[in-house]
Length: 257
Image (tube, rainbow, N blue to C red):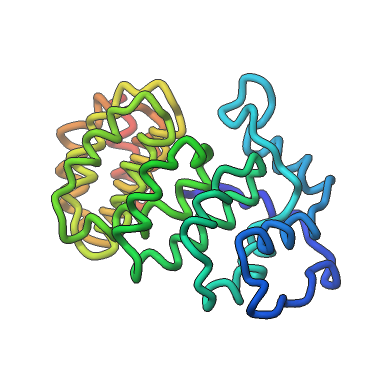
């Protein structure tokens, strides 16, 4: 997704990351404790605004402790080689702390290729805890897209029609896995399903995937889709979808709205 990085303007002091724990202590609980140990209230304030945790925002009710994604990825390095039980990770995914869930989802996405069925099933029964766009975007392609790549994809139709904003976004962003492997039929099928969606975050996700389909697979195919659907597309979705097209072509499609 084309978006500002909320952590770029924040930095965690170099000496604030704890030493790597011994292999025997590489548990889900230890990972969450490491995240808490480097929490920064000032960073939390920035992240709370960025991810709209204020009343009325799409992330309202979540809790941030203030740990940027780059720090989380550094903390995860030893855990990628460990075999933290999925039962522990599933329990950790119920944490009220956003960064805890982000770390768990990043780790599950890293492991998805080797444990695809188990992690896919865990993921779909845990969508109540995958409740912001960064949580979806770091995990849906690898976990949902990766699992469904050689299987029927009817579940995407179910998810994209869900009452849950985040399940709808999961359906759309999961197609990134297919697009990166030359398959675009799913996003061209799913995008019209959300033309009338009430959420801008869904329009952004669909437009992002359409743009990726045009960039990575076929600009001609994207233009064919736009020729048919541009007048009905939400402005945000259209803006994202045409972002990499020539300026005169972008102007042509914008004029249809």
